[in-house]
Length: 300
Ligand code: GLU
Image (cartoon, rainbow, N blue to C red):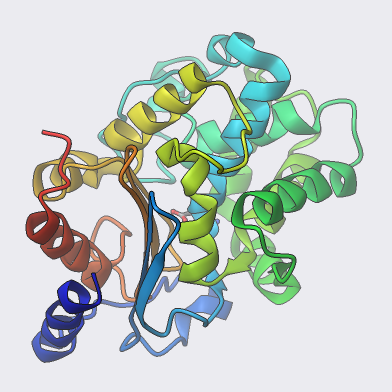
């Protein structure tokens, strides 16, 4: 695996095609895009990394995988009455379909769907309790206590989050938000502002890869479903392209991270903060494509 990662990292730095960090979140906008990390956890317990694998980054929408796991554990299939499970074909923060489909977001990974999922977790609790639960889950899954929420990133998003606020009010107007938009978004921004290294994130993915010995968080059936959603909806309107190029379930975040699952074989975390036009890591997606090709891990 070490030998396999070397040429991938070399090619990423050679091509020098990084994309631009998320500009709409001021705290992320100024990050140097020329950074790269990859970690691979294998079923036999080994973890192999290359690049800045010990550097924490903002996991952003990758947190939606963890909140979905918790919400499924909490409300089970009831969640699907509030959120669909179809790819949206629209951008992560699009308002278009919400209007047409009367406030039921297409899937739990676009922002509207993730806001509903966080609302399901939050209902009947204090935001700090729900957040502590998400953070504890992430720590348990990665086997690391050294994971924090970056308050400046959460505040930065709150200040510029008019679009998410619009989504939340829209959901509320359709009766699909039980808490106030402010409470639900406050919790959502904080879960997005969790920072992890690729080493920690790859470790956290072991439960979704179905490894023996990984923490059992949700049932096998739910693991299958989360992976199916990652494959079909994990990269917004770039999900088809990711499946085409990589052939593995993956979830991206605008912090430049990607969590990728090769069921029963590997859990992979990649980070490079420059984004492509879909809002997914540019170099990260290319690295995932090279890795999938070199290992033949595509599920197809
Ligand atoms: N916190 C980000 C937002 O709501 C998440 C988007 C993403 O990572 O794709 O805009």
